[in-house]
Image (cartoon, rainbow, N blue to C red; front, side, top):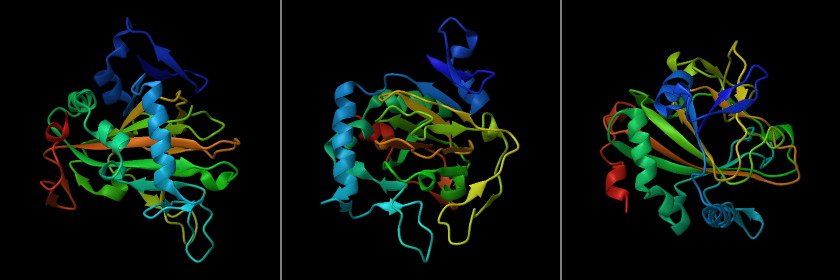
Length: 259
């Protein structure tokens, strides 16, 4: 099952009998497609444990955690946290990296063999308010892939809702090419893209995934709840993609990692 925006901006399921249910068609049209039931309840529970361990050490941010809400010259807010390459030291994350069913579905979207570019996790703690908002952006603004044939498989570890900052997408923006980004305020780590089209919120339950193209404009609202909003993501690139002009031969082929 996939999802499509309604006139109210909410996302409604598309039935399997609808021609638009073909995920490749939806992906090419919208730049994002929803995959339900990607994780079992047990896998969600295991990944939550892995993420908590990866992000916190005795209540403090662990080594390698980055605060994306950082403003240079100011105390850290610790409101929008990210960590990369968890799979190299965590069994539950490694098991996701090695799943053949995931990379084969990605290959169908990108039209050829893929490499695992990275995995990463996002953590929005409770009680941080607006500082936990993720501004609108294209992933390839940071990655510099050519051609930009890459997707992120973003897996919800908590029910992602408008209240806790579910992902928002500007549908079809992956076809616009590179979009100009600017810093939303002085000293901000992240850069922001502007769009005349409003993004559509994509709430999903824990265990479901959102799969978006590297050029699809997206962001997320703040976590305004009393619990964390956690997610785990895999990023795959088509095997012929280069990064900053260099071949990505050092990045493993997903088929070689699969069990």
